[in-house]
Length: 346
Image (cartoon, rainbow, N blue to C red):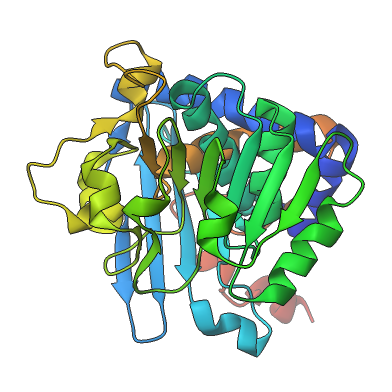
């Protein structure tokens, strides 16, 4: 039996619990799974690149469940009326291989990415950040802004996008959020100035230089979300060279993250080690920390399990015939065999 969760189901979950609560539960679930890092069979995602974008599969498993996500990244999609990123995923039972849940992951990915960003900032940023620059104001920007506001106490968003309409859209959605103020800026450098946290979440599949060394101030935490495939970066190498850099799964980040620009022996720390107390996070209040976030399958695993749990509690989801129901599990052909008995009786 496979239960399907649609985008409407995820929207109903958010309506029932409220976005702040869902984001908090996601952060809690992702943190809990990062703390049992060694229990997972991990691999870098498998990517198929084209001139238009990338399509990826992201698998992971522990002793109980196997999960994968199908996800794309096509920056030109908005011109065709499609999202830049689209995703779905499966949560399966390891003991039988039965796909128990088939879920949309476009909305869920935006939320889990924001929750992961907060998880990293909670461990790496200076205490009580109040101002965040948000560079790139597209589909994921609201989720980042609201996660940092509700979960980490950020009170002011300083926004910039090369597309002014995207910034206007972000401002409309954030207008009226209690305790959160917003300023639109004319450049990245202007938006970044004086910020405690800088989040970059741009979409272009290219070696971009969104943040340069002269923009970075002592004590900043950089949440670099947009660089997530080979040839797609956001940070000038000099920014990385002068910072403490933290990643999700190093073998994947070396290929896809901003650290793809750095020598193979450039030092990075996997975030789970900081969360588990095995590695040091921020050295001091003046240090610059970078979370080079590319997105990792463990985050989707945690999100799939949480959404399945919340959906079950609300009675959401629809059973679909993804796998045949067999009277005799060795007789698959019976699913398509003619019903001879009825024909003879006639």
